[in-house]
Length: 206
Image (tube, rainbow, N blue to C red; front, side, top):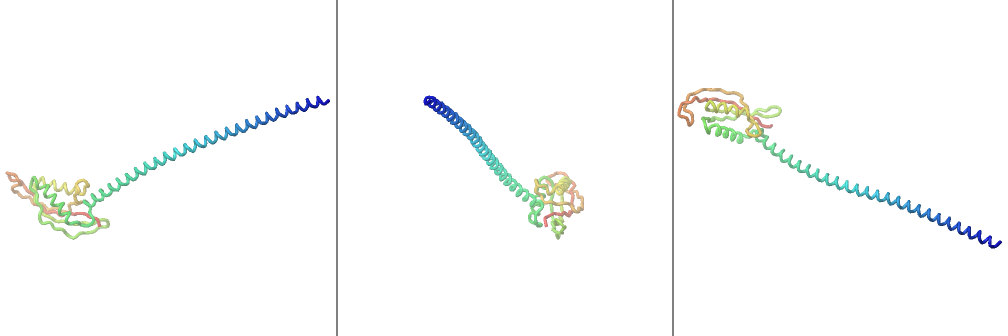
């Protein structure tokens, strides 16, 4: 009877050991699976952080490049704006600028008179008048010119105010002509000269 009891006890111990072993194995497998799963999640998170950091670095670099471009464009724009303002000041100044206007008239006389007859005399600046947006300085002058220079002078006044030429903005208000036969400048044969009196309006900012 005692032998049977010992056998039963031994069998129970064996079963318990097997059950314990199986339970330990299940627990180890479960822990391993849990650890592996968490490791995958952690690795994925690390990769995501690394990608985010890389993206942030790229965005920072792109932002820095765009900021540099913006700053450069603003500098170029500012320089261009200053240049445009200077050009506008030349053709449409603030104030009547008698001295500069006289220089412009002298330059026209010098340019046209370099080849054919063209001389300006009796320049008279009259009282400026004002409109809502700008002011006008009337100028009366007498001119002696060849026929070709007369046409060239009219074209110059017509095209005045162009940024490229930087000639004061003007227009012709009135003109009186008197034709005269005279000896043309640097010419051997008589050439018809034109004596004319003009009233020109020069414009400036209020």
